[in-house]
Image (tube, rainbow, N blue to C red):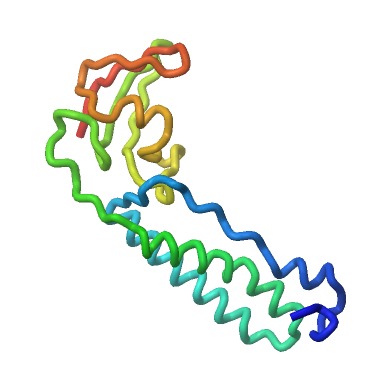
Length: 160
């Protein structure tokens, strides 16, 4: 419907409520059990925010407040629909989705990360996406293996 046929104050107000969709990764949507629960919780929170925005009387403010939750609902709905729950790794012999890996860098730093789905990755909290460059290099490797990342060496110390 054109802006001329609504009670919008201006075209700018209308365009504020038409947010572009969040990009969806082309990679398979692998998730851990915790990652699936987090997606479900985020969906519930976005739904609650959208429902709360829907009660706002002023049409312009209602549309502004509903824009982000509506965009998030579209994204999270797609991510939940395509989620592939992965079992915990069968062994700690090689790095796999869901593994927690400790590796040392050639500058002496030790780092530990869990390989998880894209939506649950949080490097500051100790998890990286299974499609990240480092994760791709270490997948399928065993403790003691050395890989090169950006001209630097990483040695896998432990897998759990």
